Structures are given as C-alpha cells and as structure tokens.
Image (cartoon, rainbow, N blue to C red; front, side, top):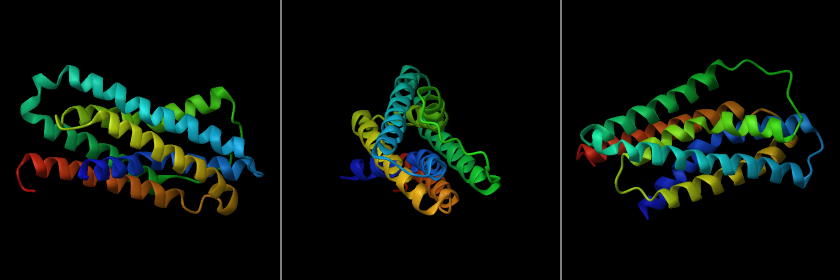
Length: 189
C-alpha cells in the first residue's frame, strides 16, 4: 500500500509542471473542446511516464557502481528538482504571449520541457531496489493525464491563478519524497 501512495505522491509532484502548462493552454485557447483536453492529457501523460522509464534504465545500468550512496543520489536529485520547481514558482514573470497552438511540434516541445525532471526521478527510482518501476510510471502517467486534462478546463475557467501554487506543491512533494528515501535508508524511519 505504501508503494501505491508513494507512486501517487510522486505522480502528483511530477504532474504539476504539466498541470501549470495545461492551465495556461486552457487560458490561451479560450473556448475549450474535449479534443484540447485529451491532447494535453495524452501528450503530457505519455512523456511523464516515458521519461522516468528511460531514467530508470539509465540509473539501473550504473546502480552497482554507486550502491553505497544510492540513497544520497536519489535524495539529492529529488531535492534539486523540488528546489528548482520552487525557485521557478517564485521567480516567474507573467507571460503575456500565451500560445494557443496544439500542433504536434508545440505539444512535443512542451511535453519534453515539462518531463525533463521526470528523467532524473527515474534515475533516482533506480537507486531503490524495492521500486516497482511499472507501478510508478503507470501512476505517474495516469496522474499527469488527469491533471493535464482537467488543467485545460480549469485554465479556461479561472485563468492562471493556481499556476504558482501547483508548482510550489509539486516542489514540496518531491523534496519530501527525497527526504523519505534518505531517512528510510539511514534507518530513521
């Protein structure tokens, strides 16, 4: 059960960038159609699931070489990603030139940009031998799909009011997961 809860928290944390972009897309598109919601959900959900899988296999390939410090690697990666999300949330300037395009090129670039941190999380997951990567990527992908799908609708309804709050929540969640991994491996919890 704790593996599912951890995967869900990880999915929520990682999906916040995609959610924030989806809210902005919803704001910029004006009249939202169901196809807009599915487009954002599928692009962001697929890439948020794919990137940790790639990171996991990269991390697993050198896990044996860093096994004694793997928990520190996972902690540092998640801490850096979380702190970066917090920094971005507090330093963002308003973007007046929102892009309403849902073209393949636009969505591909946005999906890659919002999922780069998931690649590093995949590497961190490879450091934990008890990780079920398939559970994690499934939950991350589904969570991101749902957040992005609804983010489009929310953006059209309320604008970018929650963008910063979503990024702050995502950053804090990732930092807490990193702390949990570190404390478990140190035998504190």
